[in-house]
Length: 351
Ligand code: NAD
Ligand code: IPM
Ligand code: MN
Image (cartoon, rainbow, N blue to C red; front, top):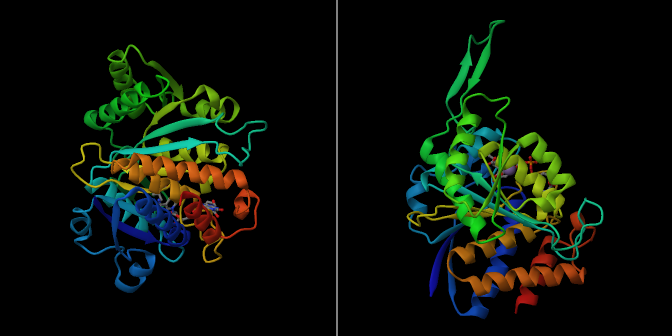
């Protein structure tokens, strides 16, 4: 079986960690008897500097025939973040209807949580982030520019279809886990969008009487994630709240270097795209010290998506093994190893 994968390493540490994920995925393919046919795309801020565009005009078309996409990270000083991200990542998520952003976190062995006393496997949850609408909107603009009464409007869009499908996805997922969904909103402050989300959440919850449904204000949930994270399993949230909560969930389970994510098109009509939760980390780019684990685990999610579940599970086991051994940890994990050393160790453990 051959899977055709598009790789977009992107910017900064995205490039370094994607090399390591490919190394590990290739080792998995060899061991488990399938092949990965890679095509690499140089779409990045560097490309923007040269051509004025993050990707070619027919970029979406070029990717549409692939079985999956592995993305490094996008964004680097020199190009405004809203320009780079709205020039590549966000249009791809939308064009391919990747309306689920699945962000599982687990406290891995050999790592310590900033939460005192937690041990490996004591913390595990998944953020189900709405990935196609909500607060991420291009609708709005600047008014009365240059005058004392200047202001901007930034609209949010919550459609019935969009809200309902992400909440249903969360409930279906919960049925495969501990049957517990927590919805994060801010209905006390935002008077249109969030009460609407709550209304649809209650409607969907009624159709899943076997799943415990809980509604929480996002501010209180942030505190709870730090103080009592073990009482959470599936957390469903809008685009912006899911974004923020997923960095928080990463932080309590070993840091941004450990958290993978999948931009999923559930119908399978379009390719899904896998990436770390973190960004291009300009502060450590070019130093060879980025932690590649998040991107390697994103690669495992890609294999799961392709149906190579045994290989995906083997990658996770190898990551656990290498972290437990503790001999090749990057600086964010308290070690002195390089990105390459950690990636190579995972690939070696897999073989
Ligand atoms: P970031 O995630 O890049 O970095 C935040 C902090 O975490 C930094 O101190 C960084 O060094 C550290 N960090 C992140 N990943 C790490 C890893 N693998 N190993 C060790 N340390 C790691 O977030 P930011 O600084 O807010 O954003 C930097 C750029 O990345 C911006 O241009 C932003 O828009 C972009 N970004 C892109 C994506 C994406 O493409 N999916 C995601 C987030 C941010
Ligand atoms: C992420 C990132 C992006 C997002 C940014 C870079 C636009 O933070 O994937 O979490 O908010 O979706
Ligand atoms: Mn984010």
